[in-house]
Length: 297
Image (cartoon, rainbow, N blue to C red):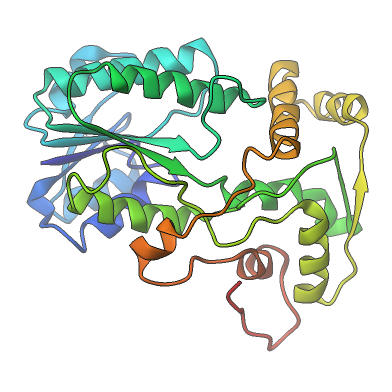
């Protein structure tokens, strides 16, 4: 049985959906914090085993992972010590349950010296995986394209992309990563250890995105550089906790350092097609002139 954690989240539920096109439902189990969630119930209706599993409750994980041959640990929406602690609990529970392999949704920039805390957390989790005693696969996912569109929220109204200095990022969609992850789960052992970076085919800066948004929508988008201190103060004034605002600045510092800049063909190979590009993502997020169809790239 293949167990997927976080299966009601933005990435996890897509992974399970694709997995069900590749393996019988009785071979799929999900570990979720709330089995009564509508997405969890929908999976149960399709024959998927749904059990409660909470990374802070080892007994629940033992039940959720029972009979697992593979466990996919979807990284939690936390940063720092608590994040790594929860990942350790899930990995140890998978080993205790007798899984043959643990898979983990890491990030292309994973590294102990990263400028971005989440990437340092991914590196720490990968160290736990290396010492867990069973084979593992660490999925080095590209930076989510959805993050780029969230950074453009203000620009939807003003046309000005006002953000700290950045660098090229191989923005990659949740949908493509989910489809590729399902392919890897269905082909156990295809990758040993960290995968190559799983990214779209181009790395784009916010200067590039401003030009692309202008092309796609027919509106003018401009890119301006915000001082980091002022940008942080603006986030805090909008209600963002100070520690989280600091982590957001880390994303831009990591991008400037080239941590997310190198695309790789592996994702396209797994998908059997070109990954979705930011032209299509921006067209969906920002709207395009009436009658225009999305283009790949």
